[in-house]
Amino acid sequence: MMTIQELKLWAQKLTASMSMREKAILITLVVVMAVSLAMSISGYVTRNSILVPQQGGIYTEAMVGQPRYLNPILASSSDIDLDLTRVIYSSLFKLDTNLKLQNDLADNVEVSSDGKIYTVHMRNDAVWHDDKPVTAEDVLFTVRSIQTPEYASPLASAFQGVLVDKVDDYTIRFTLQKTPYAPFLSSLTVGIAPKHVWENVPPRNAGLAEQELKPVGSGPFKFQELVTKKKTGETTSISLVRNDDYYGNKPYLAGLTFTFFTTHEEAIAALTSGQTNGIGYLPTSLLSSVNHRVSITRHTLLLPQYFGLFFNEAKNPILNNQGVRSALDLATDREEIIKQALSGEAEGVSLPIPPGLFSFEDIQGPSFDPEKAKQNLDDAGWKVGEDKIREKDGKKLEIAITTTDWPEYVQTAELLQKQWKEVGVSLTITSLGTGIIQQTVVGPRDYEILLYGENLSADPDPYPFWHSSQVKSPGLNLSLLKDKEIDKLLEDARTSTDTEKRRELLHKFTQRFLDIHPAIILYRPHYLFAQHQNVRGQAMHQGSLPSDRFNDIAAWHVRVKRVWNQ
Image (cartoon, rainbow, N blue to C red; front, side, top):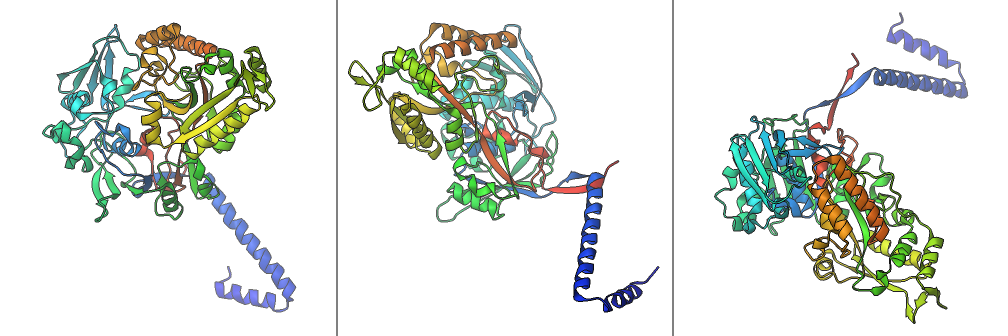
């Protein structure tokens, strides 16, 4: 075999008599052969090995806003607080990506034959981040705190009429004092707070207590550090470290860091510059900032929510006519709205229960049919006037719509204005800030049509949104629907513990809903978040809340090792 020196001498002799063109060809051939060899080796290694997650590394996520309540009793009104409490605290149950409840602190549950008593047996190996055991006393304290008016917990309504008591150190019993409630176990996905940390803090002072921003939980990550700006006191970052005493699957990541920004533009800039590994929420209006970057992966989380048009017949008598309401639905092109206003990041839906735990593929909602819409309006006595706007008894077919001032919702309203004008309907638009619209429009029900979103739970209960008892705030019946048949179906569905019977009742409710048309369900938006490609293991594609994207956080990893197949 030739030595390196002999090989070099041979190459020099070979090329000495070559022309420049021949040398160029030879160099090209050598480069091609080298690249081909490298690709062959790389392909062989890839085919015969796998990437295995390794422990270590920090995942850093950009968030917009400020954390306030890192306490599950109070956290539910803020996505940031919910995100942080999801990874710091544990709950009795959590959701998998198919929206099925899985045990967390719970080991198993027994339900009484009348569906009113839930006895939860807890695992006995969970400890708080300060090494004290997690027991039924902590669950008892958490639920009773939520029920205490002085706490003003956003979760209070979920535990109204629920009696909770301790059976033993690791067994807790929930008794529904009035009627059975089929989705009750979904309420037990709330984080559990440590009694020994909070019991001496008066409820009225809980929001200001030091423990709020130095939380003690029992989840996969524990609090390490909070960094603030000296002048303003604003939080710039919160760092968590892996909880090596976690009872579940130990996380691969050594820690999590959440950094806080004022605007989404700043958060995206942090992601694209490599300052962070991910961003917690990616608005559709800013998708172009990341779409062209191959190093960034965009994730979609489907939530049990929808946006729709809620009719308030009391504010505009035109909407009293079912034929008019149906015509407006037929004149609505959902595909155009999703494409233009939401950059394609939504699913068109027309039913009041979004796909998920209960899906009714056999029920077909109305489809875009402007000619049929015109016929409906003709049949209702609305004739086209000289200005192409329909009239009846000297009155024009004019309707007002109100929505929030977010760009995608304003653009949705503008597209509806254009689409409905094609069938002879004049639509005026008012857009307001989120806080203002809640106080001055939604609460007092001061609108003709409201373009708004509604969030259901993973185990959907349409009762709060469509039962006649919920027409006044804080009820969520935004169409002010009062229908005895629907009331009875919803009452029976929420009290039935027989899943198939409940499905049948909700199926009938959905059919009745389409018959009377109290609202137009438009679309289910995608919840988008983004991460650098080096972040692997994220698999949640459905959840009840945005924070559910962390339900599989133990599998996330930023370090890998390639090993040969066995």
